[in-house]
Image 1: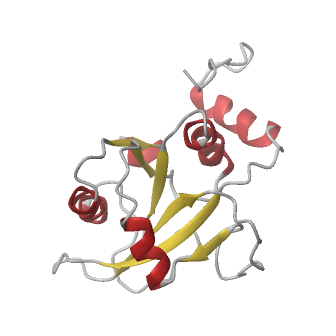
Image 2: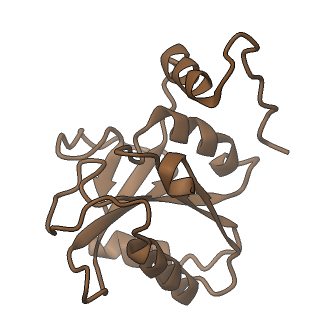
Length: 178
């Protein structure tokens, strides 16, 4: 109910053109704030690290930009992450997979989650950044692959363990949605 209707441009006859139109036409800043957590893969066949960006309310006192991260993204401290995990609320949690070579900073993604994480929407969200995307370090020979679901599975298992009463939902874009 908080997400408005989709209004496609009738002159653009396929999904690719619609995507280009939305990307080029939307210059409005969507200030979604994130805290990042770096995970070590628990998959012995595909070791390495990947990142997950969790949405947070806008900070009362903005932190200076960390140029090693996307805009409005900062690393969780251990204390902040423990506090985040201890919230234990019943908000639904959306797990987002970005499109090819994208990340949590992508405009289409921020436009999509903004109404959901608003006060009216009442959701939380996190974005699983594919290895090497969204300013994450490459620490493995295994990079993005649309069939590579091991990191997503690890995040879902982690979230189910920490938030057993929350309903988890997922959405993906582009190749990751396939």
